[in-house]
Every structure is written in C-alpha cells, then in structure tokens.
Image (tube, rainbow, N blue to C red; front, top):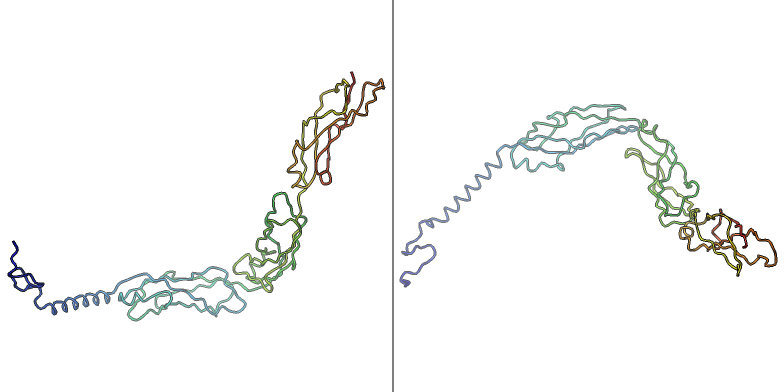
Length: 325
C-alpha cells in the first residue's frame, strides 16, 4: 500500500527533506565552470613540441638560367610553444623563401638555420630538415628538333602505307643547354588510327620529353597517315577434283594427285575464303568418241568467288593425265 501523505517532489527525499547535494547549486556550477576553464588555460599554455611542414619558395632565378634538379618543396620544422599557438601553424601561413638572385650556372648550396625561420609569437624552432638545400642550374638555350609522330596500331587487316607526313616537320624547344644537346627529336601525343581505313589528316599536340623543356611557338602539328587494307595470301591443299561430262567413258587417272592452290587478295575477302567456296573440275566434253587415242591431257579448271579482286597465284596440278579404258 502506497503512503500518499508525503508525496515525492524533485529535490526532496522520501522523508520530505531537501537533498543536501542541491544546497547552493548555483555556486557549485560556477565553481565547476571555473575549474574547467583553468584546466583548459593551463593545458593550452603548456609548451609542447610538434612537427610542421612549410612550403619553400625559390625566388629571383637570374634571367638565362634554369633550375635542373628537384630541390625540396617543403621544410620539416620541429617547433616548441603553447599548444594554442602551434595549432595555428600551417603550410599556408608560413613560407620560407630562398633568394637565388646571386647564383650562377652549376651547383649552389644554401645552409638553413633555425634562426632563419620566423615563427609566430611564443613559438621556437628547435630543428629543421633538410639543413642544406642544393640548387643546380644550367644556361637556358633553344634548339630546332625533328617531330616524330606517335602512331597507334591500325585495325586488324589494315596497314600504314609509307611514312606519316608531319607539318611542320620541326619544332623549336627551350630548356637547359646540356639537356638540349641530348635531344634530337620530340614526339606528338599518341594518334589513334582505330576505325580508319583510308588516308586522313589530324591535328595533334606536341609532347615535351621533359617537364623543364618547353615548346616554343605553336604547340600542335598536322599528321597525315595513309591506311589501306592488307593484301594477303591464303593456301589450300588436298581439295577434291570433280570430273564432269565424261558420260559413259570408263577412265582412270595416272598417278596420285595432290592439289595445291594459293590465292591473293584483300584481307576482308580472303580471310573469309574457305575450301567450300572453291571448285576444282576436269571437263571431259572435249574427248572425241571416234578417236582411238586413249590418253588425254585435260586442263584442271578452278571456280571461286570474287574473281574480280581475288587472284589465283599458284595452282597445282594445272592438267591431269586421263587414260580411257
């Protein structure tokens, strides 16, 4: 049975007395906020160390020189300071610049000390890597070179006729003098000839062999490519021979007959030619029934499709010896 004489109320115990934890609740909350704030301030102001990567800017390269090696694009710093300050350091708000205005062609070295880095207030740079940067430069030169087109393979059964034509056939390039001395030609972007079955011309960009070599003037050329269908040969052996128009003649063939035929023609046609399309025959209609001659040399005829484009280049045998019984 529930006693409803003293109903339960928030902040009061079952006896109706106020919970002592809630005494001066406002002061207790304020004290907790102050304690958390002091803890945050203490931790944010405590010196800590961390690694930071910053960008390197190479400025004032003398006219007529070009950097030929790959100097580092970033410096790795070891910094120490308040956590709140270190968290604000990024590659975007710190930049280290190396002035190259006094260098000459060849190798130059730049030593980098921690005192050369200007960090934010209350931040100290305790380490730096790399501590030395090497810059190699060469004199800038230009040169005329040959253009060699990069041509992909044609469709199956087709071939490129002759050498592709390039217009203009040369290009002017600019870059480090020593590197240019080793370059005699440059290529184009790859040219696809898939689906092409005749002569065509296409405009394609030139491709520099090195990132530090620039193409001067027009960066495209016209390439003309002549494509035609391949002419192939196909051989057939041991095909049967039909003997027609012999009527009631009783005859026999002299020796064993092995047939061999070779055709030449366009890939698309000759590739589909099969032995079933070819008919070999010997016609006996010219045999004279009143002639007492028993031995005849008869021509072997050949029937095949597409005679206007296919050429019979080899036939064996061309004649057969027939003996009448």
